[in-house]
Image (cartoon, rainbow, N blue to C red; front, side, top):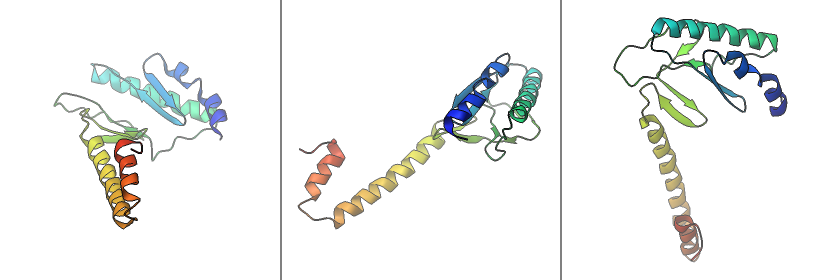
Length: 150
């Protein structure tokens, strides 16, 4: 499906699920968020939401990508938050729109991944500067460090 057609097909999903969860959609990524102090109520809401979402997909001839469909239970407390949901992979870490997150709402995973990418980029830049013509190096260096030629 093209992006516009996909959006037209899925635009009413948040309205369908609005009673007990929040649905966030960006392009072809959808996040369904549920929150409740009662674990039993949360499990019931999650199961209802899953059933409604599966039915919605079936009615609209869409398929969920089971490899990308995950369940992550966010908490700031040190208590067991296992909520068994049939057919959904529970995970402690996930990535959404390029941002890595974990169940403890820590930025560690994201900053670690970002540092690895930045270190790789710095390595490539250093290799380019070391192998380049000496006359070009000051010009390229100032653009890289200051964003403009001095």
